[in-house]
Image (cartoon, rainbow, N blue to C red; front, side, top):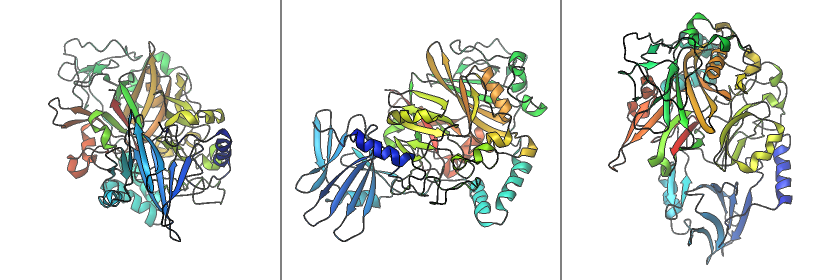
Length: 546
């Protein structure tokens, strides 16, 4: 049985690792240290080169077709089932793809019978070929809201556009989404889920939050602050609510964070926990964000290309900003990723002065599109299914053969259970927001927590908070490591759960963490964001394990 395109030998890997480790790799192919390729020629002199970008992960392939004396054309394929199908190039009366797996094999030359041309003309983000064993990833336009479109227009086309956008943020976005649930005195006793315990709070009143999920065990929606509740029809997913002003005194006085002001102390925080024994997690880049060009912030540039890695386009790789349709029947949740490229680097402080400003790195399906820099908070997934967070180091380069995805975003909010070393530094932490407005705004973040050997991923929505309030909240929920994701609006802090019908008709009930997030869904809220329409922003998704 063929093994698809194998991992190259160690000498080749070492040479390709040296390319990646150079000052400027220079191309998206040079960023892939495990890439391997096969080349065959047709009778008319056309050459076909199939590159597996990472044979360890076996997901993304690029086919380059070059007619004799003509220009190359590229197609980006995604393996429909990387755990089953091995893909290679063979001579079957001319070049063809060999698809092998689980005792089955067949040859497929979609460029010869018109199937590839039809797939590309379909304009589908994922167009199936070769009996659905492969998808052609087609270029599409990602959805964005009017608010985001206006902000980008101002930044790119108006003198002092960035200053205008920041003024708008300060005047209209600060505390714009802040909610404060009043305590509920006359409710029945409410029992939460014992597995996760309760947050470390001095004051745990009953609250009636503005949360969009249907929860089990509550009294008409009332929840005890800091307790966890099962989400109806969503096994392994739990929700909690609190306000930072309720956090236990020993946590608040433990050092490493600033004091909290009167507004963020009473601002609701909604948290959602996932028992990772029940879920697989994935990451998908948006059609536009994060980009791979230079951020406008750092002045420390190498001058050898249009991005920190020497290029400013992912071509020939195609970014769809949408869940692969093969996963739709298992999808349980999505939430937005991190900063755009322009905001994802340092303008001030020491991190602006080396590593070209520390542009936040990212990897999808084992393919590195922006280098992972030391010092940055990183969420990642390994091939054995381990999802975790850590501050990246030079030594972590050794993990590259095992990585499926990675997303960096700033520095740690919490590390080893205590506030990160830069939580209190505006420039040093690159927390964005307005320095004169004490960094208080709508923010989303995530943390990892281990309970009796079981791993939980927790997403938190802060209706208005500074990094210090985020750190204290994650401490109160006994998180091991926590990081900021995005901020300022509900499209950037979006989260939704998906409840599938049980009659097999394929309908999905979308439940948003807060009701305002429904307005971000395309077609006036009728099309689920990330699931049924391409989006310009990156996102994480959770799939129920089979």
